[in-house]
Length: 493
Image (cartoon, rainbow, N blue to C red; front, top):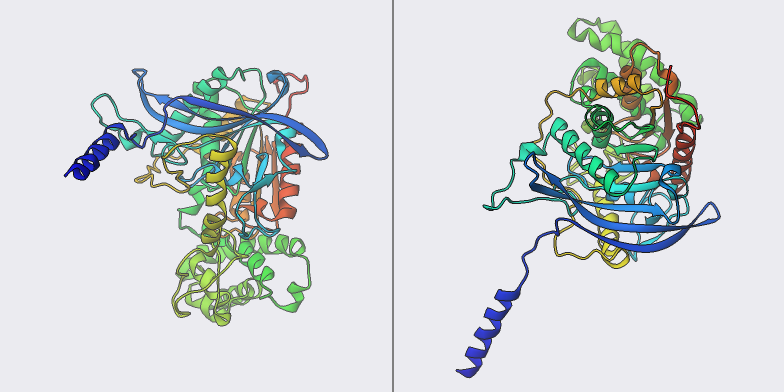
């Protein structure tokens, strides 16, 4: 009986003093580190923390987790600051944080595949030598969470989950961060990957016209422009072809005539064909002549590695998910969506689309252990809250997407503002030619075209996973930051 009473007392004590699993609303944990970049030792301060989002009444309705890297003993006015966002829209900032621009890298091989033991190492290619960096996790990603009010009621999802809602609260949050950390004097940049491309296009205008925060640069990594991706029109279909060529070339599925050339010597020819021949024919739909269809199918087969038969069956509009299944069907493999260098195995070879995204499975495998280990053991930010790599942010309101026009307006109003696009040729989700098309459409007048730069890489969506492209892409960022600094020049036309 005494043992039973003792056990009950221990249980009650445990219940009484156990903690709720919730994130601290407003906190910072700071640590000091150093990394060698381009042969030079860079001492830096790392701050892992949370900062609230407030409503119009000044009440906290969410808190965002962030990691802030600042070069030690530096002056804010002399140091650019880069705010980094990933996409999804329910993705944490982990990807570019520990694989691209941050001062640490996850353990992967030179092509980006998982290796064990999991862990992190110094990033000798980080841009910390030229800029301070803030990695931001939007609501419900990473450790960021919505907060209940005094009655325990959560805010409505539409306050956060939507193109325009997302832009609005993040701009306000950035204003607070810049003020708290005394960064108003600093040249400012925003970088967004995938959906983050839409996010930063919108933020450029929102920051400028509601927070009066002017930027020097916007960087879009494999940007998702939903005016193209979800349109389902002939333009979006025609833009796929150069990506098909790149992927087929990588897997050696093209004719020897093309296979013996360098990829970069082939793509301009395919881009020209896609815009000037393929697009006009598929725009005719069912009214294209049999001769036109046959000629296009033959050329598409030549450029894509697919057969004329399956192209004609698709009415010249080959879906990407079918391409991922069809290209290596005879070999028993599928190719990845976000990075078509990756191979997958399906239950059967007869279906029209892959069972899973081979690259995403690989990435979650390689990224999840090191980000959890790194934040807890190196940055000393410890919590029982789950780090959400990919979060449920549905329903996401995609209406009234004016982000492309918002970026154009921000550029027109701010002569300092320049834009860099970075894309991988093997990205089948947000293809490099989609990114080029978006770049072409932002300023129809052409008056600002000298302020846009496009860089392509022989990799996929996260082109920085391939070591050779990690080096080049970071160098491209350095060059972009250098070329977009004011350097004493006035902002005027």
